[in-house]
Image (cartoon, rainbow, N blue to C red; front, top):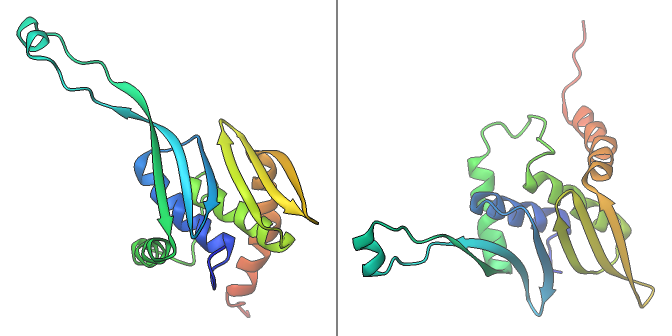
Length: 166
């Protein structure tokens, strides 16, 4: 893990970057001193001149994409994300990938277990981490993290809001 940053902070920044790229399904793992995300992306293939003459368009093809996030990159994404937030006091939208990953990060921070990998496929998240020296794999529906989000975030929101006296 990055020194001085929690999983929650790191995953939120990475999630914002993935949202901008339109990524939904992916795998994420810490490799050396950076997080690496692997996903599938759509690539436009250059149309051959013969196809252009015949009016044919190149079909988009799917290709593997690998995105590397260093500590410096995550810090930059975090600062950029903070400047883009219009109302920091508003309730976050859990359905956004950045908030889902932030919640998963909070879950990992509370358990204090080193993450080996995180994979999202459809509405399922797979977490692989070290637990007492053994690899452990957990499978979670996105909905289970939404419940976790509501249990952990809403009480903190109430604490932050000033109480009104009438």
